[in-house]
Length: 184
Picture 1 (cartoon, rainbow, N blue to C red):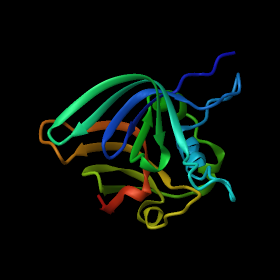
Picture 2 (cartoon, one colour):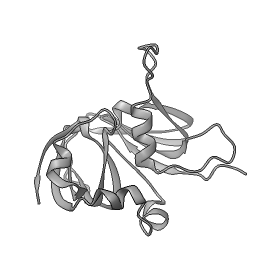
Picture 3 (cartoon, rainbow, N blue to C red):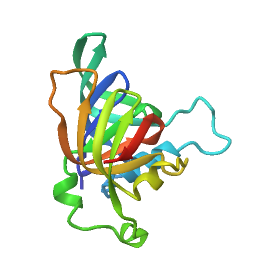
Picture 4 (cartoon, rainbow, N blue to C red):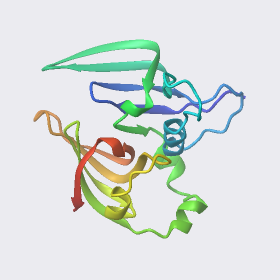
């Protein structure tokens, strides 16, 4: 049985990637939730491991847009490796249709209220959306979960006037890139 394809979009400081996330070498592996996968990869360094061993995301059949000053360079590649710590925002295409209808048990047990927040990133993006746990969740940066879910989100690129905000049901946000946030 072939792996279920996970089409992802990944934004870093200098580029935007779109392709299929290669998440397992094991045939028939269950497709993980993107947020869980990013968090597990971010903490993927084992104690005593080689310090040069950087956790990477492998994206197959990738379309890459590289940002240079006022220009964009577009390329395609059969495979791209992206350092997990460089990911600012990521989302998958099938999230709303396949995952939102059933909330996993551990999320139900959290009993945290979703608060609408405005979040500014160091990459000049403005996100307006809901975060489970709200302001309190964003004030706690843990090595276990560097990525947090932002739902019903509008993303605006503040470095350009030409593009309308993107509206998405879900993004995984790397807390390392959060510059400021407040209640919406």
